[in-house]
Image (cartoon, rainbow, N blue to C red; front, top):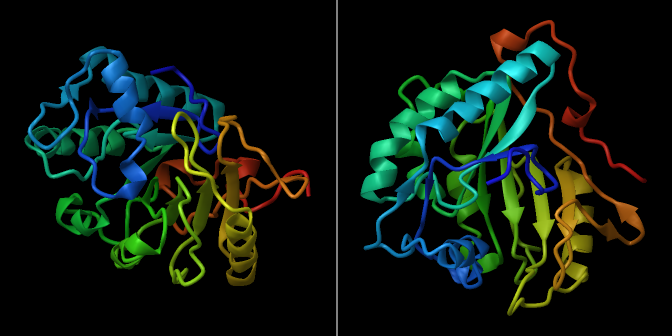
Amino acid sequence: MAETSSIAWTHYTFNPWIGCTKVSDGCRNCYAEADANHWGRKVWGAKASRQVTTKDYWKKAVKWNRERAEGGDKWRVFCASLSDVFEDHPTANAERPRLWQRIEETPWLDWLLLTKRPERIAANLPADWGAGWPHVWLGTSIEDMRVAARADHLRAIPASVRFVSYEPALGPLDELDLTGIDWMIYGGESGAGFRPHDLAWPRAMRRRCSETGVAFFYKQSAARWSGMGEELDGEIVMAYPVPRLMHPARVGAPAPLDLFAVETGA
C-alpha cells in the first residue's frame, strides 16, 4: 500500500481494512483478492475475517491532509481499494464509524468511496450527512447492464460528486441512465484471465457523456494495465468532475486545475 497511488484517477489510496466478498461477475478476477492471497491473507468470503490496518497507517490520512492544507490544494483519496466500505460484515460495520471520523477530520482530502453495494449507502451514512459532505464523492461499479440498477441507488443519495466506475467493462452500457451522475471512469479488464472489451463501448460512453455533461475518464484498455491512463482514438481522455459543494475550510483557496472537467491531449 504505497504512499501515493498508481491509479490514474486518484492521488492516494487508503484501506481502513482489507478483505471482501464477491457480489457480481465484475468480481471474478478481483485484483484485491489475488493480492490478499499472494500475501497469505485469509480475508476473502463472507465467513472470513477482515484485516484492520494499523494505527500508524490510519495516521497517514492526517499527514496527507496537513500537507494539502499547507500547499493550498486538495488531492483525491480512493478509499478501500482492497475492500468495500459498505460491505455488511462485522468488521466493516464496527470500523465504519471510525472511518467517517477520520474523513471528517481531513477536509483537504477529497475522499472517493467506491462500492458495489450502493443499496447500503443510505443506511450507513453519518447522521449529519444532509446534502452531502463536500469532500466525499460517492461511486459505484457497473460492469454491464446486469447491475445497472446500482446507479439508481447511487443517484438517490445526495452527494458532492456521484461517479460510476465502468470497470472491468464487460458489456455495453448504452441503456444506462446517466441522470445525476457527474463522472464516468472506463477501464477494460486487465491481468491474468482478462476478458476483452470492445472499443465500441468506451466510444459510445464518451459520446453519451459529452452529450449529457458527464466528465469521462478513459483509464485503460483490456489486456494491459498502465495505471496512468491510455489513449482512446489517439487522445488521452482524463476529465474530472466539478464538485457541487465546497468545504468551508477551503473557501478562498485556489482551485487546482484538475478539478475542472477538461480533456488533456485533445
